[in-house]
Image 1: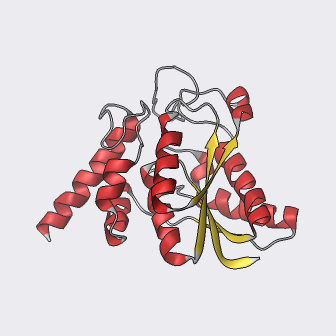
Image 2 (image 1 turned 90 degrees about the vertical axis):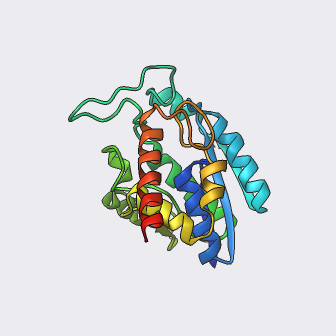
Amino acid sequence: MNKNKAIVVFSGGQDSTTCLFWAMKNFDSVEAVTFSYGQRHATEIEAAKEIASDLGIRHHILDMSLLNQLSPSALTRDEEIVEKEGELPSTFVPGRNLMFLSFASVLAHQRDAKHIVTGVCETDFSGYPDCRDAFVKSLNVSVNLSMDKDFVFHTPLMWLDKKETWALADQLEQFDFIRNRTITCYNGVKGDGCGECPACKLRLKGMNEYLSEREGS
């Protein structure tokens, strides 16, 4: 197993692209994996392809359409995005990160990579249970037992809010790249997005907070 090789779970969005640059800084060899599951903003797959190509990163796209059948949500259907107090947002896709990290680990086994990097975050996470640190750590143990390997899951953004994620992008000298080239928007609008969906509002709020802090320093 190559101790200096990483597989990055990569959607073409702000968080996963920040993680991709983080991995490129911390490991000698990096590959990216994108999952196609009939997501509402399918343009993210094209963004992921373009970014990986421009960075010279080997890019795997895996068909995960079964997830669309099993876990219908506003992220996989043309439905209104709803957020209610005390409930998970309608964009929650049950089992998504469980499957993504599991299949990324199978790919890591095939590609002889020790490290798996994902952009999940417990700070700005909309209450998604599969973005929690406890879940990632428990799955890491289970995956290692299932394959008799010692993979290491990395979550560089786990304890960062969106302002701090933008700060990390700047530290990696990729602020403008991530702002202009990634897709976070639920409506598939690149860059600053539609400005109306929850993902855009969270991203823009964090960016403005960081820029305000940077300009004031």
